[in-house]
Image (cartoon, rainbow, N blue to C red; front, side, top):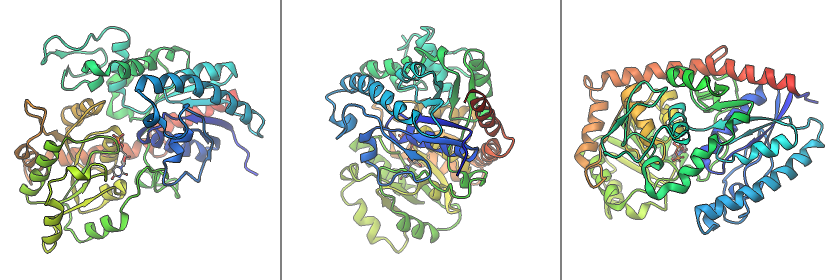
Length: 460
Ligand code: UDP
């Protein structure tokens, strides 16, 4: 019989990019003797191809058990219902888990669900907010909450200096919701992350101290911050959790054999890997530019186009790629095992929307990036990749908001060419070492996780 040191109930926001990091963090806690129960929503679990087998899974309700967010009339309707039904079903779940051998003593919650704090306090439980975005992004939302950053900026090109940040931030670098007048309600949710953050026992951030030292030191004066990332499977980092090879939770089925067989036939460091993650919808015109940019640069590419996006591909591209299979320039798949792809020796460069998970994966596997941010925190992540960590370049949009084929071609060439891309590639290798060390025994994130567990034990 396993004796657990403590029991954490993990409450993620029900989208893949938020659940995966919390699940990975859970595996780390579990390896240090903490019992884990993870509780996404019923609707989220319904859509999964597979479920995690290593931790206990329960569910709360967002009030839309059949279709989740897609079933709700609007974002506001969804959030309102989720707040009410979520809090009730969370209470019921805690009640149920109170009767188990090792009762819950801490809730690790996504701050998109700030109501979890009150529920936890009603049961006398400790609370840890888990931010899935990096600390620079968190800091920007914090300052919007405090009313210090007043955006949208009056001038489009205005550069602002935000306390705690070492570089200025322009309107093209801030998270899109900060300047998009139509995203008012989403911004409200993001800013609300701070509404009761002064009441929590820990603030955990899926990042690495060494990547964002200044801002983490600054924010640590306000909140009890601990960086605990990168939350990617251990076998791609420190290899201390032998069975931890994948996230174990996926909305889409990866075309693993097809991708790896194809990559195995490509020369070392020759392939551009292209993916825009699980949510982004690319406009038709942009898709066309991307296709031509990839074709024109005359390099091998592996491009993930989700099946709902496929109709936007130029009509004869797929046919053409198949018919020119003799030189095997490109492969388009609907989903791939991204970590296995990024680790493959044939990969030279990652053309990405710069979602935070993809960025952390590129950092952890030392792959230089070409970035095409679309929304949310992606512009800010891009700024860090290009100007702070200097491990990639941003492919810039024109006045119509489209990144043109020649810009895409130029950026890929810059990262891949012998001399021009040397520094970028060297930096990517440097950050890879640093990310691995952070998670390895005695590294900054490992120490923070150890400290978190030690404190949990004293309160259990
Ligand atoms: N991913 C994957 N296969 C793909 C494309 C993406 O496994 O073909 C994974 C990727 O490894 C990452 C996640 O999907 O963990 C995307 O998260 P990110 O935060 O980068 O973007 P989002 O999907 O939230 O926009």
